[in-house]
Image 1 (cartoon, protein in one colour):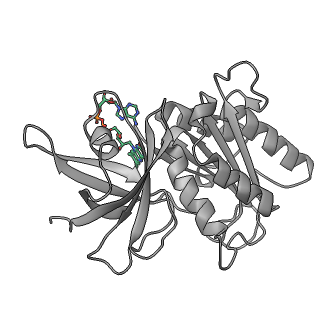
Image 2: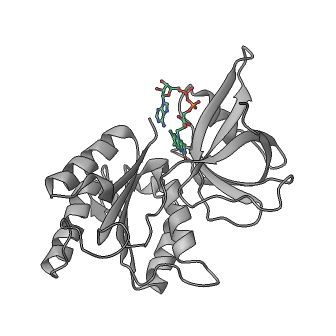
Length: 259
Ligand SMILES: Cc1cc2nc3c(=O)[nH]c(=O)nc-3n(C[C@H](O)[C@H](O)[C@H](O)COP(=O)(O)OP(=O)(O)OC[C@H]3O[C@@H](n4cnc5c(N)ncnc54)[C@H](O)[C@@H]3O)c2cc1C
């Protein structure tokens, strides 16, 4: 059965990083009153390439649900068809999509959570954080500790840094760490790969006597902590392996792979 296609209008385009050619794109969908999705889901954009072949690509929604709007965080992939099409859009241009799709969503009831992302894998994390800690309205974090561990190569690729720092300054249960794998001299922040910082967070949490690996008898998922991992496959696999080595169970580790 053909999927229902919608037309998204680009309202605003923000350059997040010139060197990485990464953009935040804000769309609205005039044919909808409300675009209903669960934070963490993606849309599938659809367009014909130069040979007339229909191409479809997935993009995580980089915003919490708000009216008929949604955001994307897209970086150009050299020689790539759809990433360049999206990054070349200008306000007023349109693109077709279907969705929302996907199961990369917060497990309920919400537990302590570690969000682990690299590159544009930050997109669904932005949706999670906006949803849990809205600018106005009710805090949905239920006092759970939420860590966002974001890894990238250079300082110029720390997308949405000011926003996450602001939330971390305002909410004592939101902890934001960004780490650089190829930091230049003079960088005073964290260095290295995300999995090392995740390990440190979990060691500290364990030492405070939290049970991490053993399911609680509690209601819901039976776990007192989950990890949500998003990015390229090597990073996702590396982080999953480290968590399973710690005794974490598969259902505690929710992931989205971009490749
Ligand atoms: C569930 C899901 C969510 C996604 N969300 C996002 C998102 O929020 N933001 C985003 O920018 N991308 C996201 N992606 C990746 C996106 O779907 C495309 O794969 C990416 O934009 C490249 O598409 P393209 O048409 O430009 O390249 P293609 O024409 O498909 O490929 C060109 C070349 O680039 C390589 N390539 C493909 N994908 C990548 C990649 N991600 N990084 C590096 N090289 C690649 C291919 O192997 C090929 O050699 C997501 C993927 C999935 C599966």
